[in-house]
Image (cartoon, rainbow, N blue to C red; front, side, top):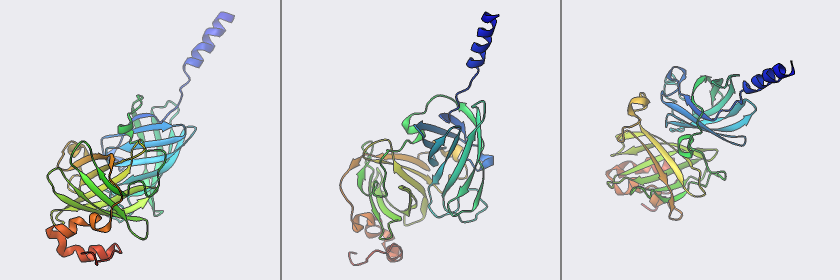
Length: 286
């Protein structure tokens, strides 16, 4: 009888599931997801998520639950697929793991307090994602972490990032491999930069998000062309409509002229005045 009891106890212990958000999950379009995958890493009680190379999640794990905030490129424009109503492209989430560790359920809301929707996903893999897959951020982050002049060592991309006097808005000028310049402006929330970019005299545009990325110095930029965000799965590998750059090389602080160089040096300069004034900057140096 003791032998039988021991076997039964052993089997019962073996069936205990240690719940964890770590792994790969679906990102269901029918629930305002983007249709590719969500990758989650957990460090202690810190939750890091990156879904469909479009949005990120930063939060805290308590037992089998996670709460925090989600962020997407754009800043103050309507989140894709939400009936065209204008909302901030960031907000809160609250998730709970299922008992078998194969799914989670929860809700998300907007940063302005408006109701969002349901966030239910199914596990794809229990393998721990890489830092890149879950966009694990550096532990020390402030609203100043991304300011300055940077280069992507894997390309000839360069960027100069500045912040307005209000301190919750940013603007930058960046340069592509082929010398093409673009301009970005947006908002800063919890050290995450969310904005809209413009190129080719403002006829080519889209959304972008910046955050630090698992290193002491540097940040990641993920951008989408506005023409691609309604079908992320089909465009995620299209380098003309979506990209991800890691700016690792810091070259010092940037000034207003460097951060607004797109409007100073290109044919778009004819629209510089309203943009510069809207950012609260001086036209004196133009």
